[in-house]
Amino acid sequence: MKANRVVRVIIGLLVLAIFLAYFQIRASYSPMSGDITGPNWEEYLRINFNMRPDGSLIEEAAPAQEAEPAPAAEAAPAQEAQPVELAEPVPTPEPTVDPASPYGQALINAAARGLPEPPALDVNSWELMLVNAEHSINQYEPEQLAYLNQTVDETDIQYAYNGYRCAVDSRIAENLLNMALACKNTGLPVYLSSGYRSYNEQAANFQRVCQNNGITDGKNAEGHYITMPAGCSEHQSGLCCDITDHYREIKNDSIAETATVQWLAQNCADYGFVLRFPVDKREITHVMGESWHFRYVGAEAARYMTDNNLCLEEFLGLYGVA
Ligand SMILES: [Zn+2]
Image 1 (cartoon, helix red, strand yellow):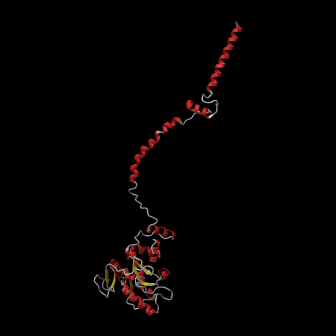
Image 2 (cartoon, helix red, strand yellow):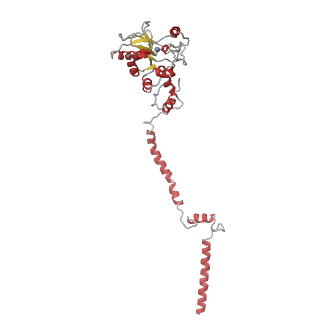
Image 3 (tube, protein in one colour):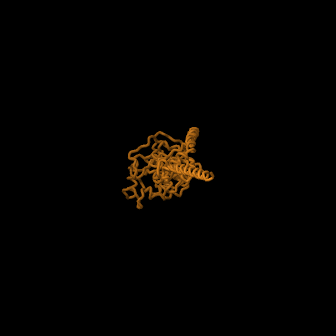
């Protein structure tokens, strides 16, 4: 009896062991492949148990489904944020400057030379008309001339012809007269010597000065112009005026020592004028120093040129002109 029972228990244990062994093998064996460590095994574990071969749980699948609504949740605030983005461009309309434009070039060139930001000007505007030996204005005539008293004892501007008075382009007459009066009001004498000259008047002037100096090209021994060929004189533009303390038959370097032109040189930018031919710019302007020749360029350009010691050629050169 005891032996039979022992045998049955042993047989029962064997059956149980075989049964367990079968399920253990079944559980650890991929039904897709004969290789229990291959990629299909990984897939089997992942699909059925969300588990890696090393037994760790894969936490991607479940959060991935939660993450999907997340972009939608972000999209919703984005729509709410849109009014903020729309509101921002209104107070920040910063215009972008085309680097190829004259002003864009001026910004680049000024920065390269260590100069402050130049004014945003239209360099083709009448105030900045360039007239020199390389830039003839040919037969140009100002649209309207204004005539000023040669001395500022009388202060009116006249628009009718008077050959004994100084003519300038009417657009600069008021500024010129205000500057002359301000100078006079400091107690200094002011004489408006020469403004507009026609092409023909300049041609006669050029011939006379050349004859008097025994030259033919208008240049002195140093190669600087003492008179300009017709079409190349700034006086033909009507945008300048020779100003001295009183009438002088010959204009020379001694005028630079007079209080009148010294006051004008220091204050002319306030009226939109510049000293056009400073003696230290002769190599650029190719004109001898003319301490009496004041040119209107407008207030902004005059201030920038004066503060930064630039002649008109240098100033326009920043903008790619000249
Ligand atoms: Zn002049």
